[in-house]
Structure formats: C-alpha cells, structure tokens
Amino acid sequence: MIKICTFHPHDCGLSAVAKAKVDALLQSDLPCRWVDYPTSVLPLTRTRAARELESDDTHILMLDSDVWHEDVVLDVTRMIGYNVDIVGGKYQMRGGDNANACQLAGKYFRMDATGFYEALWVAAGALLIHRNVIESLPGDLFRTWVVDADGEIRGCPEDVGFCMYAVNSGFDVHFDADCKTIHPIYTNPKTKVGKTK
Image (cartoon, rainbow, N blue to C red; front, side, top):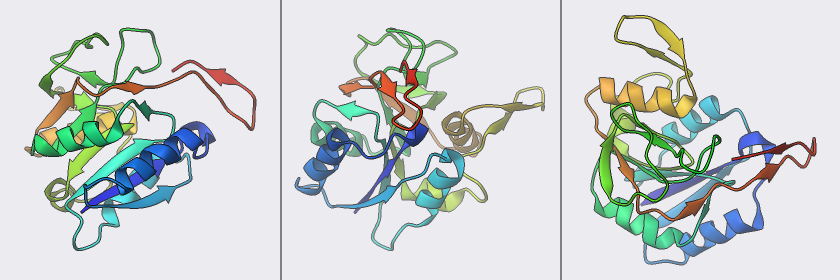
C-alpha cells in the first residue's frame, strides 16, 4: 500500500489540480490511500506523516500541492518499479529554468535531462520513500540541519536534511529525471504575494 501524503507549502491549500492527481492515483491499479496534511510547517509535518504509517503501508509518497504532474500514475508506477530506498521526481525549483529538485555530485541537473540517477539529495515535492528507511531512522526525519564533512552543523531545507540523514545512515537516494512535472508560479491567496517556482 502506498500512503499518499499531500502537503501545502506556503499555505497554498489543496488546489483542484492537486486533488485531481490524488484522484488519478486512487482510481489507478496502484494500491493507495490518501492523507492530506494542510499545514506549511513542513519539517514537522513531513516527519509526522512518515511516522504515521499503517501496518500495510510499504511506501510513503509525498506530493506538494504546488507540484503538478503531467501523468502522475505513470510517474509513480515507474518510481515504484525502481525498487529503491528513496526516489524523487524532477521538477523545477525556485531559481530558473535549469535548476531542479536534486543534486548529483555537487551539480544541478538540466530540466531537459532524462534517466535514473543516484543523487546526494532530492526535493520532497514529489518523493517516494520505502518503509524500511522510515523504520530504520530514529528521531526527526526531516531535519533543517546537516553535519558537514568537517563536523560543522549547517542549516538546510528539510528535504535536503532528510536525504543527507538517510545517506549517512547507509540508504541510497535516487532521482527520476523522466518525471514530467511543473512547479508553477504561485501567488499566496492570503498575502497576494507571488513567488516564482
């Protein structure tokens, strides 16, 4: 069973497009259940979602409501088929057309890249995690800090902190560059302030 978890970065709420991708997964042949986490406190909420697995959940699929898939069923089916610990899908991040949601050997990938790669970290907006990873890691999973090679504690986004925690604990992180997703320009409905994604 795949536990689908939707999250609402920037208090964006669950859009009709986000609900449609969840509905597509629930109506597919993939064994799924869905839980919505309507809060923007992502480090705590992502950890809570991961810790609240039911006995038949084999994976958790984290989907941010502001990341849209061209074909979410195809993407998730392919990601499950890789049979790896952690895999994140490609989507554009803040910062330009060629910056996307992973880091491989210290370099960002171009948005036109395709394939499947081992990564240092992947973003959590389209992230599939196997249950054994969650059960093996104690404490807060989505940390906003990492310990660098010099033993120094450095701040970081929660998804980077999670991946580095997992990698340092012996798990592999992968990047699916064949995911077809969009991380659109977003305007917060509460503040009317736009943010480029």
